[in-house]
Image (cartoon, rainbow, N blue to C red):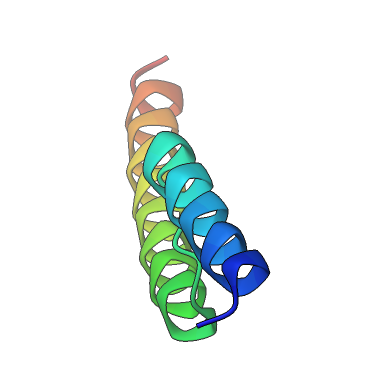
Length: 57
């Protein structure tokens, strides 16, 4: 293996491990879909809480 390619792979792995963002395309897609579902859940919960608070006033 070329030393430049090896260095590039090690660098990608190091960045991925330190940031928590996967280096592969499929890993990034999986992480984004997970984050989207978490955000949607949080928005629904906040909406329900705000509705219940506004209803009691």
